[in-house]
Image 1 (cartoon, helix red, strand yellow):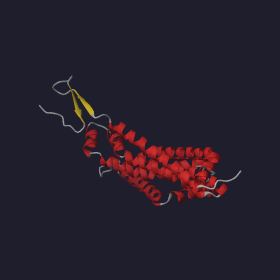
Image 2 (cartoon, rainbow, N blue to C red; image 1 turned 90 degrees about the vertical axis):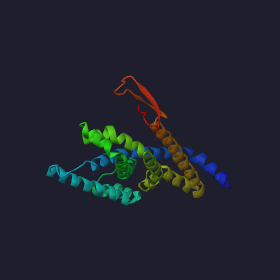
Image 3 (tube, one colour; image 1 turned 120 degrees about the vertical axis):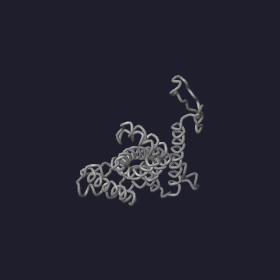
Image 4 (cartoon, rainbow, N blue to C red; image 1 turned 30 degrees about the vertical axis):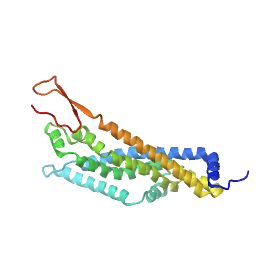
Length: 264
């Protein structure tokens, strides 16, 4: 079989021979990115809630010391994983656990674990910023009617905070799709890894990685558009209805967003 002599000829040949391999790598990339982002969000959510637990001088000494130690540990976790490259974290965790703990982690499991704890460090600060952005009066009102810190977070603060940080969460997801490529250092069969394998067969690295770049772009572009639709869905409709009042329990008023409630 004669080999192609043009750029598009090589593109066609590589797709015909390695198309299923590229799709398989894209599937692993999305699996790692989705799993890592979801688990990282849950980890970051837990860290952010713990870091916002109020501590005052009225609390007993045990609680104050415990919260101080917990905050120090969480700060170290955040600073270490935000301050070191993911490729280094992957090497340290994967090979370190093998050498010193005798634990041979499955490549895919290790990849999801690494992405999750790395994402968790970023998500913790993103969510904490979202919590701080919610008006303090709403949290104080929740406490005034007897809600605990956790209840006020779950029912009052977090629903608003999550909507405020949706663009940042989406951005972190897109970053994870691209940054999963560094996990090829621990032999994870994600998109970059299979692309490198395909390129080495004919030594056509430019054409092979042009295909890989196009696939990454499709994945991130599609993800971005879906997240935009989710944001609009969370915003609700253009109108909202207020039901009942002290003077007329059955009355309803329909208003547009941003419109003030009329006064008699």
